[in-house]
Image 1 (cartoon, helix red, strand yellow):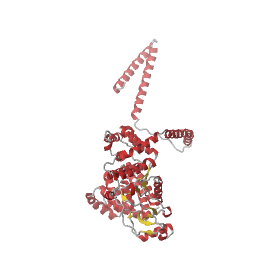
Image 2 (cartoon, rainbow, N blue to C red):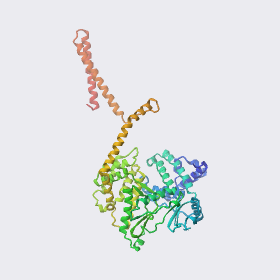
Image 3 (cartoon, rainbow, N blue to C red):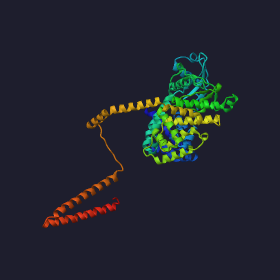
Image 4 (cartoon, rainbow, N blue to C red):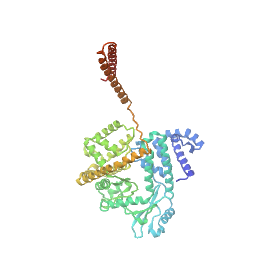
Length: 553
C-alpha cells in the first residue's frame, strides 16, 4: 500500500494536470480541492480553464492530459480506445492517437536488470547483445540478441521503477473511481469502478512477463502443426517477471505493400492466411490475439504469417460463441427479437433500460444488412456495430466480446488492404458452419442435455437443505425479509372499492329479506318493514349511481 505522503503528492500532480487541461470542474464535483494549494485553486480555476477550453475540444484535452500523466494513463486511454460500448466516438478517435513511445533507458541499466534476474553476467547468458534497443515503450524496451548456441532472439526488459509507478497510479485510480460514481450519478451508467478494476487486472498482467510468456507458449502449441503460421518459441531459462526472451521472427510487416511487391509475395494468399489464423483462434481455440495491429504481423517465406506480442489476449467460452452464432443466425433470418435477447443476455443492461429505443436501433441495424448481396456486406463490422448500439443504451458487454469486435474489425481491414476484393464473409463461412455443426452434433447435444439434467438434479437435491437453512436463519433473527411494491396504489383502490360495493350489496340484500319478513306482521312492526324497504331502495339507488359514475359496470 502506498504511504499517505507520496499518495497525496501524486494525487496533487494528477489533479494539477486535470486543471491545466480544463477539467477543474471535475475536481470540484469530486470535492478534492483540498489537495490543491489555495493559490492554485483561485488562479487555475478562474483564469486558465476557459482559454484552454476555447482552443481544443474536450476529447483533445483529455488525450493531452493522459499523455502528460504518463504510462499508466496512456495505457488506460489505449485500452479505452477499444471500448466503443463505453466511450463516445470523438474520445475513441483521440485515444487511438495516444503514443506509447518514450526515450530508451540506458544499456548499463538493461545489463544490471538482466544480470540481477538470472544471477549471471550478460556474456554468460548471451553470445551477443545489441546495446541500442530495436523498440522502446513506457513499460519495456526490446533488444536483439543471440544465444550461446547462435540462436537469434529478442529480449524484452522492463523499465526500471515502472512497476512501482504503475502500482501507485492504480491505487489512485481505484480511490478516484468510487468518488466519481458517488458524486457524478450519470457516470454510473459506465461503471467507473468496474472499468478501473478491469484495467488494473490487465496492467498487472502486463507487468509480469511470465504471463505474456504463458500466452505465447499456448499460441505456439495451438499452431505447432500449422505450416501457414509461425509463433515464436519461449526460452524459459531466460525469462522472468522482468525479462522475456523469445525466438526472433524477422520478415516483412504485413502492411508494407511495396516490400511485399518487391519480394513477389502473393498478397491474396497472405490475406487469406492471416484472417484464417485469427478465425481459427476465435472459433476453434477460443483464445485470440487481441492486439493485432500491423506491427505484430510479419510475412515470412512461402506466404507464412508470423505473429508476435501476446501481451493482450481475449478468451471466448462456449456460451459466448453460442451467443455469437445465434446473433449471426438472427441477423440472416431478420429475427429482431432473438437478436435483442442475445445482446441483452450477453451484457448487463442498466436499471432504466430503454427497450423501445434499443429495439428501434436494432431494427435499423438489421435492415442495413438485410437484402444486401453477401459480396457487399462487411461482416467484420458486425460485432463493432452491435457493441456500439449496446453502449448507446448503457448495456455493458463482456470485455472479451468487445476485444473480439476490435480484433475482427482490424484483421478485416488488413485483409482488404492486402486484397481490395477480399471477402471476409466467404473466408469466415466455413468456420461459422463448423461451429454450428459442432453445436448440433448428437454427441454435443447429449453432453449438453446430460449437463443440464445434472444441474437440475443437483439443484433439486440441495433445495430442501437451502430452504431449511433460510427458515432457520429467519427464526434466529439473522435477517429480515422486506418486500417492497411499487405502482400498486390504483389496484389497491380498485380492490377497496369492489369490497365496499360488495359489502353494501350484502347490506341491501339483508335489509330486503328482513323487511319482507317484518312486513308480513301486523301492528307497528309492519311500518318497520316499510322503512327497511325504503332504506334498501335508497342504498340501492346510491350504489347504481356510483357504478354508473365510475364508468365500470
